[in-house]
Every structure is written in C-alpha cells, then in structure tokens.
Length: 423
Ligand code: URA
Image (cartoon, rainbow, N blue to C red; front, side, top):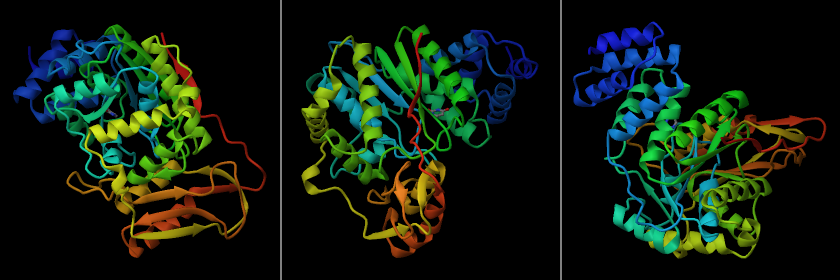
C-alpha cells in the first residue's frame, strides 16, 4: 500500500477500506506519511466527502491511536455531554452538576477555548486553586463519590486527532463534516462513557452556520456513537446570539452559580434543564430536574466538584480592573446580538487566546444588560465590558455596540432548542 495511491483514490471519489484509512493515520503518526501528503488527503476529503463506513473507520482509527479511559469500575450508567462550541455557552457548568445531583455519573473531559468560542477548562480554571489535570484514579474516585468530574483529556488519548487537528487548522481543512464528526466522536468514545448528549450549535457564533448543516452533523455523530455501542442523543441549539448574560471565564462561572442557585437567565436555565433531562433519560433515571434545581441540588454538587478539584470559591472569583458601560445610541427593541462579534470582542479583551502560548485573563469579558427581545432607550446600557485596562475596554466598545441590532417594533426571542436528533 502506498500513501500516493490512497490520496489519488480519494481525489477520484473512491471509497476507502478500513485498512487504507488505518495505514494513512498510522503512517502519519510514525512519520512515514508526510505532512504534505496528509494535507493533500484532507483536502480531498473536504471536496469528496466520506461515506458513513469511511467516517466510522476513521473514528475507530483515531480512537485506536491512543489510550482509552476505562470506566467500567464505576457503578451506574456514565453519561458524557459535549458542545460543539459557542459564545457564552456555560451549559456544561449547569447541566452536568444538575444531572449528577439527579444520580447520573458524569465523567467529563472538556476542552479549552477555540477561536472565538469559550472552553469549559478555561472557565473552571478561573476559580482560584482549581485544577483540571486529574490522574485517572483521582478522576474516577471523584465521579464515584460526587457523581461529577470535569478534567482535561490526557495527551496520551487520541494523539492522531491532535496531530490531524493541528494540520487541519493550518490547511483550511477544518470545515468538513466527516472530519469534524470523527474528531469529536473519537474523543467522546475514548473518554469511555456509556452514553453521550451532544449539543450541536448552529448560527453566527457556531462552527455550523445554519440549522440544516448542524442537523446533518448531529445525525452523523449520533450514528457514529450508536454504531460504537454508545447511546447518543443530539440537540441542535441556536447560537446566533450569545447564550445567557455573560461571556468570559470568571463571569460565566458566576452566572452558572446564579442559575444553579435558582436565578439567572430563563433561556440558559431552560436549555440546561433540557440537557440535564436528556442525560438523566440516557442513564435510565426518572428525575424531576426542575425540582432538583429549585432545591439547590445542582449547586451543591457543583460546589463539591470545585472543592474536590482544589477550587476555593470563598477566595472570590477574579474581577477585571476596569468596567466600561456601552450605551445605546438610539432606541428600539433588541432583535439580535451578533454572537461572532461578541466572541471576537471577548477574545480581544484577553478572555481567549490569539496564539497558543497566550495566557488567559480570567476576569475579562462582557456582561449583557439588554438581551434579545428587550426594549432599549437611547442612553441605556447595552453591555458592560470587563477589561484589564481602559485602553482595552475603549478599543472594544465600538465593536461591541455594533453587535446589537435594534428593531423599530417589539421582537420575540426565537426558540433556543431547534431540533432533537436520536436514532
Ligand atoms: N471540535 C473538534 O474537536 N474537532 C473538530 O474538528 C471541530 C470541533
């Protein structure tokens, strides 16, 4: 077998065998298939696509490239949750402890901020003292005792995805449905849970720009999960507007605590309850998630998890040195808040990374004072910028103001959960 032949077969639209896919991936990791050959193959996949069985073979080959987390010594159905990434998306911080408080075992490996989208690990690390680097035994003990652990994936898991992802990032080959589906699902399968709830975001602030493409990705990932013997459900949710009232690491942790305490944004609360409900259903647990939320069960579990991972909430969450109000120049009703622009502004404030080695500013971010559907008068505060310096805040203000789209007449907030995809 030759890499050259395999690349040519994909270029010409043929279907690969499992062996061909494994040959290419193993060769790439071993250094016998060159970067330029892998890049050529990835581009051929982008233009030609992959059949379901090719995508499945690629997913398995990615999983087999590294270690798999063995969770069978934890009693009960283990349920994972994954979001494809959004702006202000702190659903994991609410839904995972809620589901755990309902009795679900939640072993969760999360990621960091990617481009303009936030990452659960960065958010959690804004809690003083907290670590997301848990050795497998500590991770499992925590899941057994508290029901929930949220940690970083070990570098020994799915190394082929890491190598491929880095190459895709610099060769314009990220946006390919089979490549995204296999990348996400290989990590979920290696993480060892019995069942998976996927939150596939659609819209301006998401990877998938529209609902049909998000549904297609959701269906592909659900099929991959089910074919690998994991019960999998996907929700397609809206990401045209930021979710909830805050964007930024410590701000989002504070907002999650507020929702878990029974307050907060109604849409964020509702979607978190729906996701936690799906997690319970997959675990075979008939729970009243709303009641558990109102009784403070989710907040208690979340605080236990933070403490178990070394977090000291009592030390206070980091706050930015500067707060700048962004005011409306005209009146109307908020029709939309461009999630991509808000995400990019947040990134520029230092809440995300522009380069791999950048340090995150945990206190930086944006709080939204006028959300979609709300009435605004000229001079009202639309948002507050939290920044390390006045210069950063002033530079962000015009861009942030322009993200608000006002209408002359009242507007209804659009639905948030758009589709449910299951087998
Ligand atoms: N997230 C992933 O983990 N992989 C992709 O390819 C895209 C988003």
